[in-house]
Length: 536
Image 1 (cartoon, helix red, strand yellow):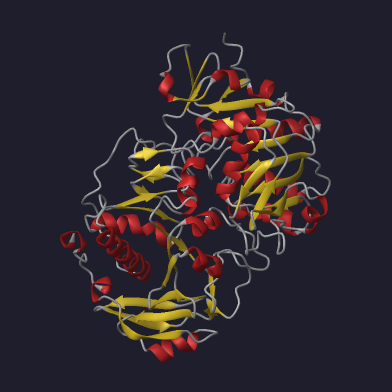
Image 2 (cartoon, rainbow, N blue to C red):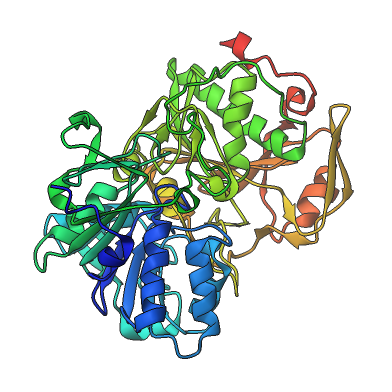
């Protein structure tokens, strides 16, 4: 009965050459680092497996962690034949993966997180790929870049996106090889391979990865990394995320390779084992990032007033992930329910390489189900960061020449959410901004313009958003714009700001000016809470 619990060397021995390997991991959340390490150690010792292709969503690593270190070694080895290519939705946490792709040393493909999540679910049903409107009119559209990150990928076309028409409407059809190996992670496995996730911050799509590997044609193998082994049948069946018959091998990992997130070994508040109080605590320091987060929260509270009920929202990485903390300061956590792409509802989303985890979530669902909430417009609104906005309202969140952080969940969320509140500083580069005495002070202006005539790559298509009836607002520390059919309209400016000198002169195009142009709410720039809880 305990035959499935094996040493790591036994498990990775089963991975064949040229395997297509699906690997779980939202950054380090449910990332099977130990299995990746042992798989690579086998290659270094024996030369096998070679020619593997990884399908990861978004990426099972953080800077300096196992996969990043493996990719560094591969980059420095001109003769490596371990890795042939990768489908990755966020290569940003691995500089060496970006170098491998940019220098055409491996095939590089990218989709959105939600599309990749649904791909594994669809493949497990025996379907060839995912049909969706996400990506139309953006860099993912095959009439643009088609998800190819380099020329090698464009030549090999192992993963591809095609335009199809149904009843006169265009869709995109995403296809990739079906995985024949899945490396997944949970907390506990019993002797027959049932896997639970009680100490994890999310469980993403580990079940779907296992199903995709096991589906016909060509049933593959599933290897699960866990922290501990329990006796069968001692696990609560309601807690089993991956049933034992879908798992071939179970490997117990040392703690070093089984962290909850990049900077957290284990915190019971992240896995929901302890629910902390969300009122009180330290107040966030007043900064321009907090100013932007507060202004977005005002939009959400106005939405609460309009709908006369609490709202469900998504918060992206960066400035948007501060909104949850501001909402708690204002006593609004029961009016604004936040979600994170990996599956958590509520709590305080963590940022940086810890993104994906939340402190004190009240629910955690699967990643494909979470993205159904986004793509289908189940949520009421979303806030995502921007790097560039153009005169049509198109948004580029992260792509620049020589830089491949990837789209992450941005394409799905920005396509599906009925209301989009894009967040970012007005300019980039070396700048010095200060909030003092209820005013914004621009001590040194950023030397990089973010409101440009044309974005480098379209990741949010504003024209399609307008066709769908989306409400779209662009919020910075000094200016608020609204998307209309005539273009961007400047509606608000910060106290202490000169509209002509500090806003219009730092844009590559002229926005429309609202006849009701006004100063931003002065409470946003004050040291004290805004009192939004009392308003409701």
